[in-house]
Amino acid sequence: MELDRRLEVDASAAQAAAMVLDPSIGDAVLCTHGEVIGQLLGRLRQAGSPIASDASWPKGSTWVLDPSADQITRATYLPPLHRAPLTSHPSTLNADYTPLPRPLTITLCSCAVRGCSP
Image 1: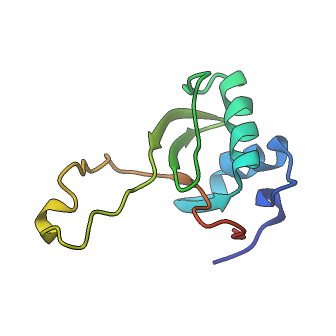
Image 2: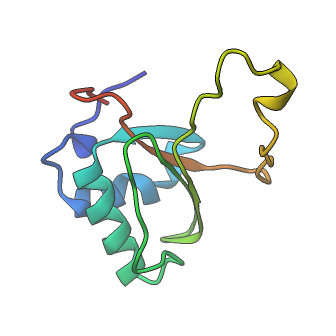
Image 3: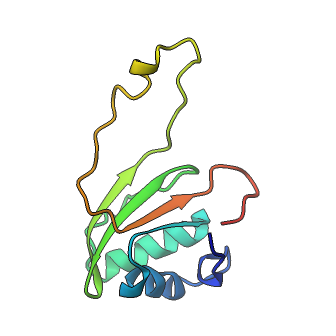
C-alpha cells in the first residue's frame, strides 16, 4: 500500500486523471474520496470516456476503469456491497455475484468508513 497526494481529498481532477491514465500504474486499486471521484468521473466523461452524466459514487462503491492509451475505454460501476445477515447460508451470500471479465486495470473505490484515509 502506498499513499499518493494525487488521491487526497483536496487533489485536483487533473492530478487524479493523470494517475489513472498513467500506463506505468498497471493493475491497481486506488482508494480516494467522493469529492475526487466525482470530479475525476466528470473529467473523464468530458474527455470521451463512457461514463453516464448521472453516474453516482456513494460511499463503499467501486468504479472499474479500463484505460487504453490516453482514455478510458470501459467504466463499470459496482454498488456498495451489503452484508447478508449472519444467519444466511454461505452459498447464498454471493448469489448475485457475476465475475467481471479480465483484465481489470484500475479500480476506484470510495471509502466506506467515515473519516478514512486512502
